[in-house]
Length: 398
Image (tube, rainbow, N blue to C red):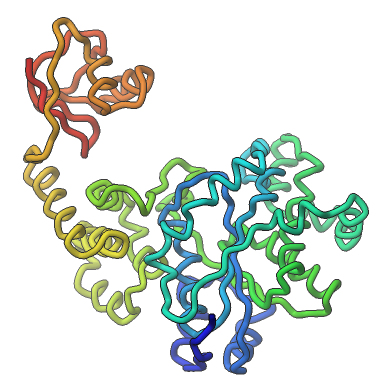
């Protein structure tokens, strides 16, 4: 039951409207007025359940929703269990593979547990909904009715469709239906504000259009900057560089340390709850020492999801393995069989998921014995310290 009062503190509202924010529709003043009114707003973000993973890029909108929560507003995380069965148009040349409803429901499970550290606001918990509850009930006439509110020209304005046309790649007619369905989510839940990354601006504005036409209501849209590397490539699952928040503390710490220097301060702002004043002070101290800044960021992220002791342990582990080139004491031992080859050792010791993965790692020079690169996966293995990548070790003995 909702117990928290609506907070209209101007400083907190100013931070909500600016921290990590790219744009506000219709404008920031409209949303400021709504937030100052004392009325409880209904705010939502859609979650794409095409995977069970939650990575740090995802958490940018979660921390923004947390700000709404702390001000006392109603926050909904909508599981796109139906829309994922169609296939959200991607920014790639090809269309995204649709999923079954059962697959999307299975992937949606566990979300609340994984994000508890973010959304655990006393007296004002989030609500989780699934859009198959209303979209699965739509008739063909309902779909035609939704489509009547848009033109083909409007759909072709979406930048990813423009890129497909320019590149000579196909656009499935069904892909035009996705923004209609996402727009109908806003209508079905009668929301006041939708939050999301800039890559979802078109879909979110489609919901704004439908709310105006079907409910005569002015729905706000707040877009957030994307967490990107120095080249502008989004850090996330579609680019293969995601950092999952439920990774083991040592892995989470190590992966954060691989982020490009250019992303550090935006990450502090967008994927941690650290106060802006503290971030500014830290930047003043460490702007010329990106490694130390990343150590602080890695420590903070591990602390959020695993606690302070785990953060201290992960930092000590990183320092011992990567700074002082020590082998971790807890590295597992592995008994070598007579004549076993390196490819099989990597699989049997669970350092690689398959033989093809093992061969790929060896080909990339990621596998070493006692600090020397192993070049031939068919070579007979021998005793020593086996290392894969920067974080995985086995003590081999015969």
